[in-house]
Image (cartoon, rainbow, N blue to C red):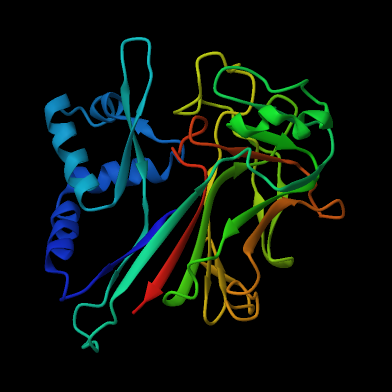
Length: 312
């Protein structure tokens, strides 16, 4: 999920870094090329495309990274690690001339949920689980989803159904909770892979449907940045990073409002946990399955993550 960059007078260092990054024809061209390639481009390919010395390209890339406009990830290659550049910013918003009241102090707590630590599941075939070194259980068998070894899962796929994760909420009485954000890497699930294979993927919080998005395909045109060497080239390789934010007003999925339900309505401060359920409904318009990626698969080194933001 790409982020919005807000430029404000009370954060001059960040603003200067962004203005500097954008004040170059070469860097603007690099950004444009990255927009056209969601899976990223390595630095050598950028240098060749714009006929630039590798050292100059590395300098441009470093400036873009320092401004928060791109992300650089290392991918194993035949001749050592490659540095892959991926666009990170959705847009740049300038709010530098408005006066703002003194902001309340905030802090965040991050919980990283291992992919195989789901509490409950109901899935249909084709389906499967794999860890960093091999498959877990028998491929296309729903029984694998109940194996004790599922806790080692790094990629999970199924056609319809759901996985439910339960995050702790013991922190909510300590300070004022103002925002919950969940992030995860996902794509559709096709036989082998198919970049044009839509699937309607739904997220539920505490049993309430809050976000459904259409994944455009099961991406396999390039190997995932963090996929282990044993993973077949002809299988799903990477997904897109999705972001669901719940505030005191509503829910925002990948940058757009998706539900009027808020933190209070979803009762995230009540009970003993916060339920995060993700899957594909049997009656969805596009039942194209789902792949979920852990920190050792795909293009983003993360599991399913929940970030709680507090104000004090």
